[in-house]
Image 1 (tube, rainbow, N blue to C red):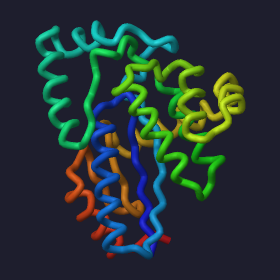
Image 2 (image 1 turned 45 degrees about the horizontal axis):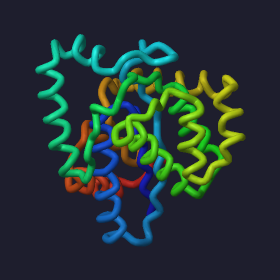
Image 3 (image 1 turned 30 degrees about the vertical axis):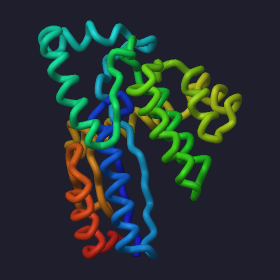
Length: 223
């Protein structure tokens, strides 16, 4: 039995961080039920804010403009913070200074998935570390040096990663992946696709994701 999961997300989306933690829990439950099932997890790009300048821009002013003021932003942070705590995340929004352009972060994930092959744990550590850098540490995940540092902490070669990021390699592929997601009607993240058959939108609770996994496994993997 195989279970293929595609996760469409963006590392500057707090709900995607929550969704990842929910997926982690759902997968732990799934592996208890189906210890012999091979799980193939693939991360797909989405640009939450595709118009972000390459160098980033001030974070809170952008949010206040987008959501209508300081009070609305505080209410949003409180709501997301409460959901985060239930998933074991202590968001530190106040540490974030810049809204990051995430093209290079997506390129890094794309690159990691390509070079580590079957060792998906490296990619999983990387994705978690990128979310943590953004939302727990307030680091600028649009900065290539920061991304290389995060990658190195996850076991990748920092020099090689930085050289990759300084090139334009895979930029077109990542942008194309984001366009493909929109072509499929994915307009919000996180978005989960199971065995290329069933989908779940939003930061669904672990139990809901687990139920979709069961259904997808019963229906099988498309030829």
